[in-house]
Amino acid sequence: MTGAENRTVRVAGRHRESDGVVSLELVAADGGRLPDWTPGAHVDLVLPGGHTRQYSLCGDRWDAHRYRVAVLREPAGRGGSGWVHDRLAVGDEIGLGGPRNNFPLVPAPRYLFVAGGIGITPILPMITTADLLGADWALLYGGRTRASMAFTRELAVHADRVRIVPQDEHGLLDLPGFLGRPTPDTRVYGCGPAPLLAALAETTAGWPSHTVRTERFVPRATGPVRDTAFAVHLARRGTEVTVPPGRSVLDAVADAGVDVLSSCRQGTCGTCETTVLAGEPDHRDSVLDDDERAAADCMLVCVSRSVGPRLVLDL
Image (cartoon, rainbow, N blue to C red; front, side, top):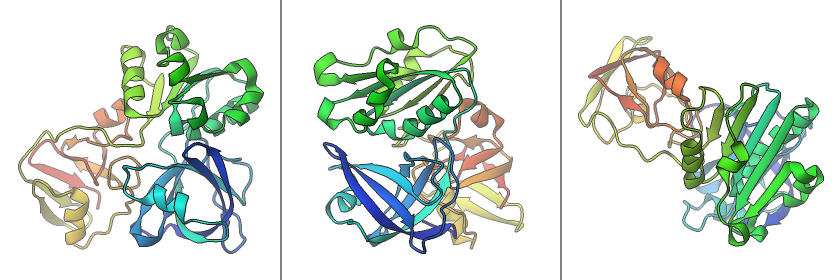
């Protein structure tokens, strides 16, 4: 991770939650309290070997001294989850950045939650908050098999508010049947693998803006609008850099001596969000919603580019 909001935490507990998923309890290495957070927030785990990975906080947000995250083993991943599963032990210390929240729970009388696989993690504290607020809510939770689905025992206390749908037993999630028609008092939150989020987007196409919020763990597969170089003017410094094809704005401005706080470098964590003063960004991230993209006043410089020949950034 680039930047200064880093601290050291110690692994205070480790638990198997399902096939392929382990949860970690993290406490401050100095015994102090940890930063407050809200449902939907994530943190960066800074692992040995330079691996930095983002994980949703899924524990008790009112416990100021303990975080909980859950890590899915990803055999085709970049090595971070394998290191957590195979080598990270209780008592070990690791770096931690954040928390940050790109997936906040907004107040509403009624919520419909859709989770797939490890996408259940940001939904857990949302459910707790919805309960505390007395909101009506329901969860549709899918996974490959029942044994692969984490936290089903915790969710069992909510009885028929929760629908557990292992794919090998019941097939794909019935999104139209669960979501019904849009209503003014309902907000939908979805998190999970790309095919599930694509199905959710298709099912809710045409619903009012702000009704549906999703969080992605992997970047959108989109190509740039512009395949030629463009200029980025750094307004605070009065200098200009050229961003060639194949090089990110983040790296180009770093070459000019401007250090922008960043983490995932995939457009999924929101750490590098930067104010745009002029020009039209080519948004290629998985964080900003449609209204934020249309406003064109910010961009994630790790992946997003420029539609036109020049951008002016507040750097």
